[in-house]
Image (cartoon, rainbow, N blue to C red; front, side, top):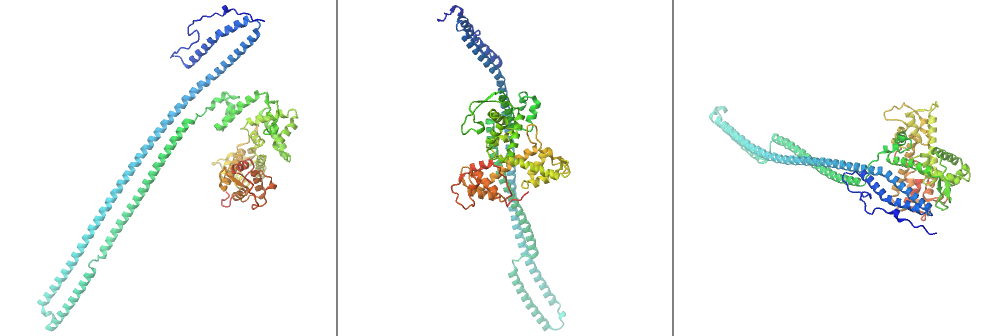
Length: 632
């Protein structure tokens, strides 16, 4: 059937119109961004209006295709409405982006101002140090000049003492000569002293002259022998003066050495300060280039279901990374509840057995509490059996026994999506790690056994069965249960249990409350701290193993070397535990491990990184201290 010919007279429009009538946006410097956006929207609407009216005329004229054209028009109208809603939703984000950009610019300016002030302070400090160095150099020059002056004075004093010594010797000789002359004159003037015997006087005079000659010779000999000898009193005085000057000189030398050392230290400090300043400056520039402003988490109060009260409860005690997980979980919960079906992943070998399905499965939409209770029941059943089958097969069989074959896959996909989403929940995250093979289930089982054993030890100490322990008793139980933990680790556990450094050891603690769980299966801080310490101790143990091997991660290592390194860092390691570690590391059955280290194992070689990753999955812990380290 031929299409009816449209009447063109109904579609005539004005060919020349004003630019504003066609929605053309003229530049107006007084318009804001919002006004420009509104004007742009109005312009686009006016541009599409003629086409809309022409399309309506087509619909009215072409009666045969009216339903098809109407559905096309409605589809476009719905799409345009959807696009307008999207634009309307993105406008606040644009304003928020502008605000965040301004905040970032302000912070950058503040950081630059702080950097300039810090550089100014460092320059002032540098000038002060240079002044101190100049002052010390001046003191050094002054001391050197003083030492030179003292040496000159000492030489002058020495010459003066020498001249005085020579003058004294000459004076003594003159005095002796005068005394002898006076005696001779007195004897000549008074001859009556010797009586009347002149011969006797002559002999006496002769003997006296001989004595004088002998004495004069002795005196000359003494002068010749001791002419340069200093008197003891002068020598002792000069020796004391010299000793004092030497002590002063040694003291000045020591002070000078200290000043030199301080000067060198100040130079090194100055150079290190400059180096640190350059490093901090480069780090600051890198941070300014790559960092993003700290998010305002209070904005999430109006978005999260439950309002500010629930957000405060969710955000309490969490850092930014954990808050991102919480926010993603809240967003994921909404998206997960909107899904009615999950697409099957197929039957490939890489797909876990409990997810192998082709087609779509129903989303059972359980609550978070229902999923947690279901996982707890699965763990109870798993711990009660002999654990012969793999954990993934057990999980599939458990769901089949609980919900029947028809709903097994639906519940498997539903639970998997929930535990994959809720990473912050302790029960779900641990079950997900064991289910996906990131941990061996022995890690979870051993941790539960440790908590149970600790509670049992506390109950045994509580002889009155009152549920109360003193802090001293708590410390004793922790030290006896964990003899390898250091003192600071015991203190961390006690603080997580409610002990504070300023509290008394006689304070009572309700120890049973330390092991309680909330409705979502979250443990108390005490049990969480115990779990975190276990993970840290495992990391330290594996780092010590890597250090003992002395190899890079990409290098390969043999089984005997790993055995020897494990025995070195943990001498108390028994044979059964050692074989279990080696079996996990090299993926060999315990029965195929060599009985003796000397046996040939050249073909058992693997990359060190793979060994450490496999041991990280298992329950690896220290059995005893190294011989050189004491147990705290």
